[in-house]
Image (tube, rainbow, N blue to C red; front, side):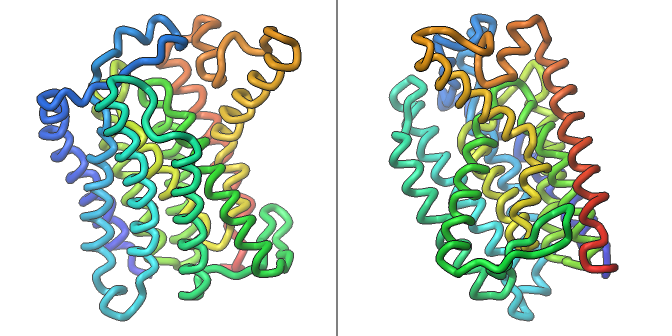
Length: 331
């Protein structure tokens, strides 16, 4: 396997993200595309009111350039797996972009309804799974990480399972985007793990895509680290969730998202438990605030500490996942 194109994708994505960011942030300020902060959130977040949102467009541009340039040989040879992954992530990003535009137009935090977003995401998820089945990158044999075995599933059951995993992952990634740099820092080890596994397994389109994603996140962190100059918005977070799902399914290991996405899962579960317990006990709470990153902020953690601790947890589970999966194909 030639690593030159994977490295080229990394460099192109990083460079384009950084360059686009220099022009995008002033443009977003000019058109008043500012973030509205939830009134029931941490009071110290109110100072972020008006910070430009939809900054995810910069790493979307970086990935678009990197993948299309680095994968031109595969496309000429009829291998459209990388563009399929990119298209899926971009459609998810388009849903987020529509949501962000609605929020900006209404000057609030309510864009598309939950039902509208879920239905759009469901249609896109099923279409993507069927496309991967058609081009041969996905089988109905569910791979079980850590046990190195597979469980055959009926096709309809597998498609339904995949759609559930995609919807859950995309929305938990979105939920994690609540502290400066957090979702980028948590997702960077995930992208690197996918890149290293793809290189190990000689899956060049996937390694190019994962390397471009990692580089885009690094470039975005330059502008999104605390104190953030820009937020990725639903445009970026839904694209990011879609890109992570695309890699997991294109490498035929959706259940690897459990250890790799441990932080996303913790964020979602803290929110579910908080709401459920609040309703069950008529007003009592498990956490000081949910999702759980806000709980730690309420406990006195700085945004920097939340960023580093959560990112290190993600890194530890990415290393564990890599150690357990690297010998999957005996390479």
